[in-house]
Image (cartoon, rainbow, N blue to C red; front, side, top):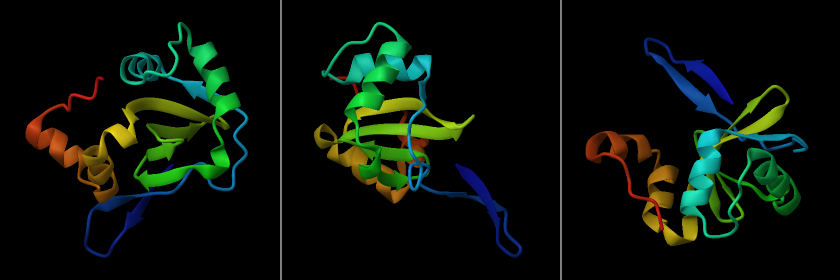
Length: 128
């Protein structure tokens, strides 16, 4: 969830927090983009519908053990996701794949330099 923090004489800066912390996750929505990227970047299981993937995510991941990385980035069971909290539920926006297979990506996210790297060097090739 994005909040804005104002420092004296400075622009508003985003302040993020872990949207999973202290929250029981019983409602998950995935975007069309998330479904597409899941099927491209993860070798686990192919899903033909968002509903199938949402059910799988609810049943197979422990949301009490989510690692908050930076901004809206999370590590859930070794899988990188971006997510937000809307309408009393978690919305998964995209996945960049398995973090164990992409250690440089993990470091860029945690340092807050991912968006800079994309602007500077272009899109990252994350497909297996």
